[in-house]
Amino acid sequence: MFDEFQSAEIDTGDAGIFCLRAGSGPPLLLLHGFPQTHLMWHDIAPVLADRFSVVCADLRGYGGSSCPASTPDHAPYAKRAMSDDMVALMANLGFSSFMVAGHDRGARVAYRMALDHPDSIEKLAVLDIIATADVWDRADARLALGYWPWSLLAQPEPLPETILAGAAEAIIENALSGWGSSPSAFPAEVRQAYVDALRDPSHIHAICEEYRAAATLDREHDRSDKAAGRRIRCPLLALWSGQGALAEWYAGEGGPLALWRGWADDVRGQAMPGGHFFPEENPAQTVDALAGFFGEPGQAAQKILSRR
Image (cartoon, rainbow, N blue to C red; front, side, top):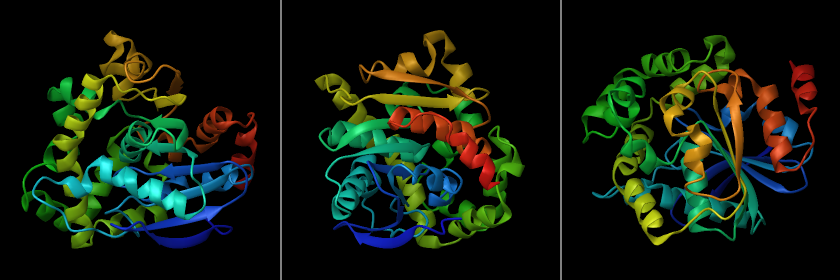
């Protein structure tokens, strides 16, 4: 899937971050979400690498990246620490500034980078999220029932860890088939890789710590930025599932674009066909949207289709 990519594990000082790299041109970092790894970009990254220096990284605690010891306040798994990883990763690869696209948890790391490291981020794409503080401020029964990881995985250990360890296949099946995307969008080897990644106790604990941080420190960091008037300075592209929660739940507030304009001045975006995992479900449309935003014209979809 990544035949032309070179792999590396970069020591960022606090974590060892696994990444794949290929291409030339402007640097572009791609970040995954839960319960995935860098493999989510298997259709998209090779096409973007025709015009960009593409880096696909596993977040700390996920995939091939390391799992630093946590602390009672969960700070090692706050998006602030995870975004520091990625800035250090890209600097190690020779990129002092770069563009970034993130899906789900990776998008939360990406927008935190834009807030904490504004000189490093040239353009930002967030896929199927709104800001963490905005999610919690609007949380209701729909969130608790529709996106159970937010509440379940944030519970004190060891309950969430025990559940994940004993039900890795069921967790992956629920996410990949129950969050609006077609199960056929995920090749068997990718699905199995996601299951395998949820069977390691250290990674299980790290993922739960990341959700605990989202319920505490990440909310505090967002609210602190809002109170201080800090805003995302770079252009921001928001893409979301046209049949998912973001399209429905926040319609009365103007939808995701209106909410992101509370954080940034240059905001654009659109709904995408498919469910939560639309980058894997509809990679052609996703790659065209990203390539257009990050500087390339359309037609990238034809390369996706020709690869299949």
